[in-house]
Length: 114
Length: 116
Image (cartoon, rainbow over all chains, first blue to last red; front, side, top):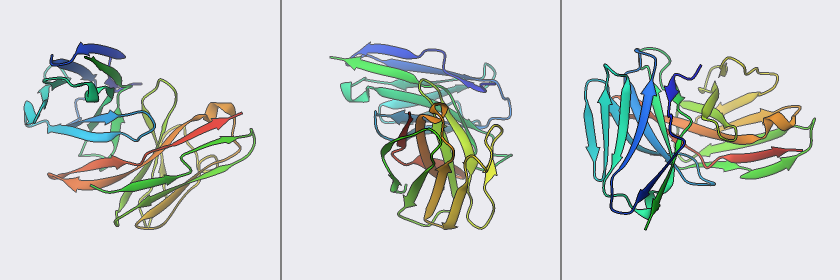
């Protein structure tokens, strides 16, 4: 049973525009959320995270929004750059249970074209 | 963060054989994890390997198939035993490091395994 879902397997965006990647979760116990970026032949790289006590976290061009009532989070990349082309994984954690245990979505392939 | 290396980076193995994957970290860490990513799928946790205790396996994964060693705070191995083509995947190790009150995971580059 997939507790973290990324329903869009791919997204294509023009350079300079906004990329919005979406993620839904089913477990109401999740209280910490992370986004990872993965290039081919490399391991996932931690990008940005958000705690459930917040609804927004920003780091440069990357902003994550959390809507707890809808069990939904999104990653915004503004402006998008060709180097952002990668697979983005959403992950969630229940810090009250197994420390560090992450649940991952299936990923969204982002392509940023010039 | 931490620098994590894995060996081998890729391998092609025959059905019925075993492969041991090594994970080396440049600093001492308590928490290490092993994941599998099958084609088109998400990262699936195989087991948690904390130093000083037996590995904890997730549902669907057993020690006889995926034995894990954790001899010290910088190293771990995962063995894929009696391989079949269904074991063809990318295998990743990760470490948990404290960050802003919670543990964040950092991944190695992965081992791409093809079983023929």
